[in-house]
Length: 428
Ligand code: CMC
Image (cartoon, rainbow, N blue to C red; front, side, top):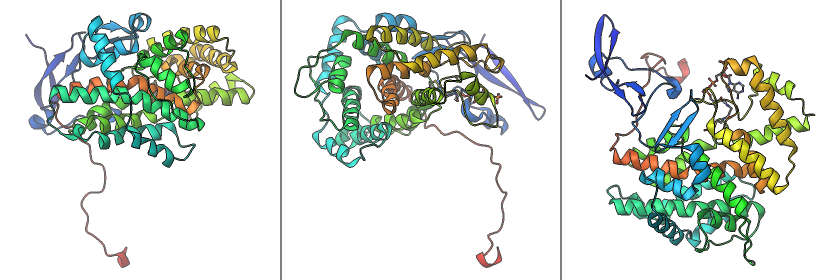
């Protein structure tokens, strides 16, 4: 027998259906509550509100579990590649060898971006933030590929837009990096796989052959896999909600990029390094900064700590911490901020304030140190997060469309002035 929930409001009891997920997650379906009773539910920040039923990513914040389409993040990070994970997220299954090769080939055929898009780079001030550039450039893809604006596209047409989005993103990201250096852009080459091509366009030069370093390819694959999806977070919910108005994929992804930019979300990786630098330059007294983070009169927060859903540990942080140690050792990099990061973590993990609030290092705590070791400037970090998150955004947008989800439109409890008469200016 199907489970129901009872809710008692103004002496009347209402039966509401209970939805059970495949991992036995339970939700009370309140969609009809207003029609039945006149009440809505209120949950600022959607802390306890499910916005959809999704088959893409499973996350248990209490147990520190993260799985894409049923596969654990630990196994995927160890054994898979970013392209394979992208395929898994978007199409639902791990690809066969042939599917994998076809997917990579299709992407390789679309990595060039329209030459006219280069003119945008001339217009951006030389030090404009890479995330601002990325959001604008991705949105402008809709101008170059207007067929994506048609709302009743066939599955094949939608798929082509998806392939173009994936393919052009790595080219755009690497060109943003080149622009930040004032260096000439490097064109994609079809002989490379996705990640190698990205590294070639980013760190290669026009005039010489780029030597793809397998160590870099491996760590980039890992980082991108770890960021590839994270169910209904701020940017992903944004992509779904923008897409629910029947908005095209490029504009929906661009909206997700804006949501990711904030330091409470993807921008935290930049904020972490800036914070570690600040602590180092201030003499490296970690206890002083921990005290600042605990002080409610001080706006300072320990960046890279805490998470809305992980209340035990962030499984991505565990993997990334190890990857960080490995890559620094392999590259022979000795980064003084790593020491500060480790000290902060040690102190915070024992501190009553952080323990009580279940605040642990999140994925962004160590990712910045890796990006830095690879040679990326700090303000590029969130762009790299976006590159990784792209398959997840696409998969979620595609699922939202396939489910024919209605336009996203929350309600509110109005707390403003009640009706009043307009008063002429001279009498106010
Ligand atoms: N430093 C100090 N105190 C903190 C921190 C922190 N980093 N994070 C949360 N708290 C405190 C907060 O002040 C509050 O205390 P109290 O109950 O006394 O008022 C309590 O912990 C709960 O915090 P909250 O802000 O209500 O929690 P939230 O779920 O709304 O916010 C968060 C989650 C990630 C925005 C927050 O922990 C934070 O600002 N962390 C730092 C930024 C960061 O690292 N963001 C990256 C998240 S992981 C990447 C991603 O997926 O986006």
